[in-house]
Amino acid sequence: MEHTSAKRKALYRKFLVGYFCLLGIPLMILALSIYKGAGGAGLVPGIPVYLLLLGGATYQFIKELRSLKREEQESAPKESKQ
Image (cartoon, rainbow, N blue to C red; front, side, top):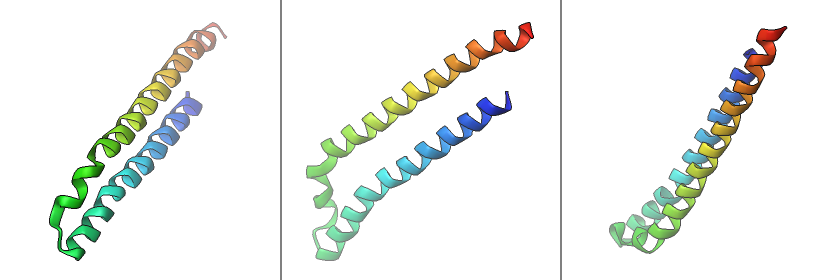
């Protein structure tokens, strides 16, 4: 059981880093846009792409989390038999 919790912790850490990186993209664009004097207008064209990337990362996270849960459920009956 400890092995699966380590896998779960690694999965959460992996996607937390990924979400922080995805958050950095619009923040960097916003900082450059404000520096150039355009305000938040530089973010508008990239919103669909950013939402697509965020949705893809979330989909992958849910898919891997379900796979991990399924793996835990399959290993639980094997442990109880032994």
